[in-house]
Length: 287
Image (cartoon, rainbow, N blue to C red):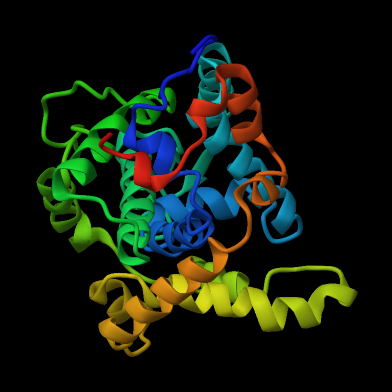
């Protein structure tokens, strides 16, 4: 295999997991989860144009994630540096205290990171991707490389700043942060937006038929405490799992090379750079 594989390689769990189409559902779940932190979501509300440029924001986020996973080392580092620079210039006002704070506070970056990797891992496993517990731990540990890109110290020993490296540490982190989670006006706005994102009038029927189903499924896969905070009844977990498995099976029926034609095409670029053996597929994990 020639070429620079980047921060991750075809030997990593990350490489094969993120080539699966259910990652789009996981990304929406992450947004629902991230909105539960009042300071984190306030930073988004004050500094983002997501309500007027929903699809642009979605594609920029997808481009960043795919660049850090499938891009070269230089591309990943450059993308991380750009995000750190932008975050360093942004601030927000605490909705409860009026305090002004930077959106690059380590605690906020850690929350966003943990909500994201928890969502990716949770949806992947629940939709039928056969990961062992050891492989799930390995995925969480691998994601410390992406935590470093946004400015977190992946090697920090202090409990408050430690980036989880396995399922136990990730669960302990969520238990520790739950007292600060809440659903206020900002989280309600995100909830409403995710159900009805702005779109061209001609695409509204597709949004109602397709997008809302995906958004409802992403919301349904949240943990019970998130449902309680949002104030809607928690769905039957067995039903949600069946729907995730059925949706995953359906999405995987679309040929991978066709799916990967969608922008930003980083997977196809990585295969072209590294050779056909680099083609991501969940069944390759652990080989």
